[in-house]
Every structure is written in structure tokens, then in C-alpha cells.
Length: 75
Image (cartoon, rainbow, N blue to C red; front, side, top):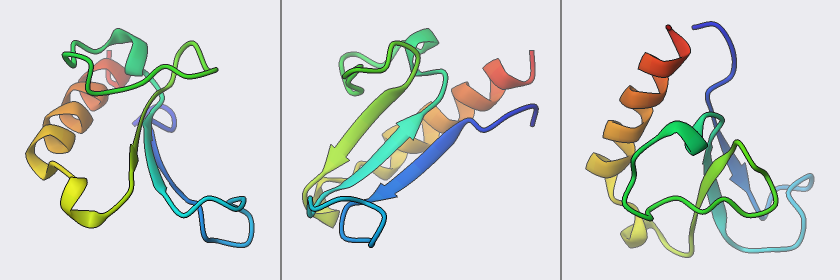
């Protein structure tokens, strides 16, 4: 790993703000083919996905995106 490639932002944590969601982000999200799964938001390189509840999480999609991001990071 060369740099940070993903993060999990907990909205209810003291440093997380006042939202109740959990946000997952990929630092190289702009380079991934994800079929609209990730959102660009205000950051032009980071792709994020916000989850309202645990049943919203598609583990297999996240696994594939993390794997692709690690491949990009290793190049």
C-alpha cells in the first residue's frame, strides 16, 4: 500500500458531525468503474457511499471496489 485508499466515517462519533449515517469512501473513486454506486460529492477524487442502515450495505460490491482501488494504489 502506498497511501490511504479507503475510509469509514461514523456520523454518530464525536468527531463525525451530527448525521446518523455511515459513509464509506475510496480515495481513488474517480478512477473506478462502479456503475453509479459511488457518489463524487464535493471531492473530485474521492468516491463515497452513504449507508442509512446495515442492510443497505452490499458487501460483495464493496469488496470488488476495494480490490480495484488497491490495484490502482499498487501501480
